[in-house]
Image 1 (spheres, rainbow, N blue to C red):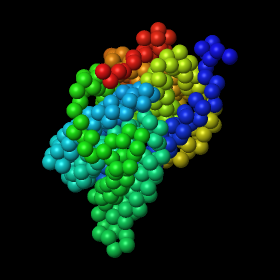
Image 2 (image 1 turned 90 degrees about the vertical axis):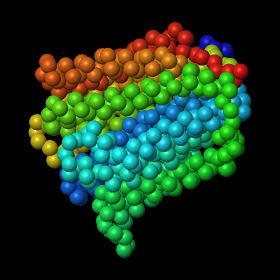
Image 3 (image 1 turned 135 degrees about the vertical axis):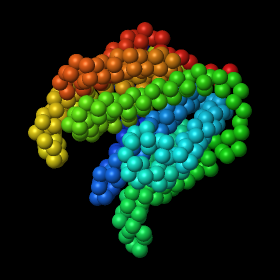
Image 4 (image 1 turned 30 degrees about the vertical axis):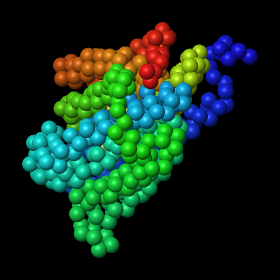
Length: 455
């Protein structure tokens, strides 16, 4: 049968590759969520000041992670196509450029976090007790930015060639180390000093040092598909430097703007009322389960489609894109029922007022309604179009939907129109279905496919 006549891919190898790429990414996301949850649980034993100081420090790190995601995803746009054509030298040059840019940006984060953590904390709070408590925590966390950034970019580069097990193993062991050393240093176990909040930072530093040595060490000493080595850092960028700026920098700016928009969303909720802010946090924790799958699927689709375009199989790339869109839409529909079934028991886990619980239920009703379009938006924008190299369009779509529509409408709904939490939540998340529609139209035009050449 002529495969070009098929709307979706029916090849078992396609689904096998997708699952192989998805599973480790999903597990890594779950590990990250687990680390944050256990940190908050342990630090919660020392009162609101410690909790707030850790939360603000973690917000800085979350923004940093969005930048790392942009740096890594930008490199994948190029490296996945080069791998499809088995052009190894351009892949090494791309890796060298990406790692040098990563090192530069991470160094800036490190300098500010270590030298002036008080400046950073004052962005989030004017409480002097919280600032003083958070300063040593921020300084120690700042020491890990460079290590975490290089590990993250190396992880994305290995994923682009299908090497997914090593980063997963590194994250799993780092999770265990983080949990163990947090317990030791937060509470002063096994003869260690009781450091409380600082102990959480010490545990994080130890875990990220290990992850860097394991993941990045493997990448530069053992990894054979790309063959990047320490001397490869000095490879001249040449013409690929311009292409990296063309295809990768829009991804970086897009993810950076997304991180900023999420932070601003929290600010909007926080300035409306404590109840709606708490309700949004509880709602986000449950909806995050679907986001984990979306991240895995979008990452897999970007790599698979990038490899396919690199091979020159354009018709097959479109077929794969059709398949990912259909799967993501069906996933969004299927997830509505289990989320609905667990919502009441989940809300019951929290000691919150009846009013706050009702706000959570209204937000979840809104989330159910938008879920299928949200999953499609995530996979098309962060996966299919990125894999096709359409990064400039994505920057425009991402920034316009959130900064010119969603955030202004959410602020107006909360501060001017004084609408119910349902409508505030809807407006602050309307960017996702809007972006899904815009990106789907772009996908249908076929203009998203950009073949990247080394010369």
